[in-house]
Image (cartoon, rainbow, N blue to C red; front, side, top):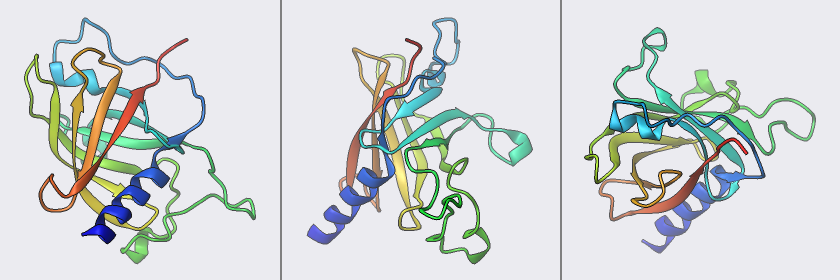
Length: 171
C-alpha cells in the first residue's frame, strides 16, 4: 500500500509541473452546458506541463459529449540530445515513438455533477512517465472556477492521489 501511494505521488508530481505560462481563457458565462466550465488550459501543481481540456473531436474518433486533455506544453520538451521526448514507456510498442508533446493523456471524462456541485468522472488519465493508465475524476472548487482537484486512482477512488490544477487565464 505504501509503495502504491509513493508511486502515485511520483507519477502525478512528475507529470504535472509547470513554470509560468499565459493562455487563452476558455470559460465564459454564456456557455450553456455546465460541464463546459472545464474547458481550457490547466496547470497541474508540479509545473512540468500544461493540459488543454476540450470536447471530443469526432474526426479523432472521440465522443463529442466527453472531455479530453492534451499535453500542449512541456517544461522539458526535448531530450538532452535535442530530439523530442517520445512515449518510450508506452506498453504498446507501436506508440513508443509518438511525441509526448501533443499527446492526449486524459480521455472520456463525463460531466457527472450539477450546477452547484461541479464534478466530472468516469474518465482515464495516462502517465507517459511510466506507461500507466489510471481512472480519473475532477471536482471544481465551489468558490473559484479556476481551480479543480483531479484525482487519479486504481480500482476505487480511495486508492489514489489528488492534485490541484489551476486554470491558465489571460493576464
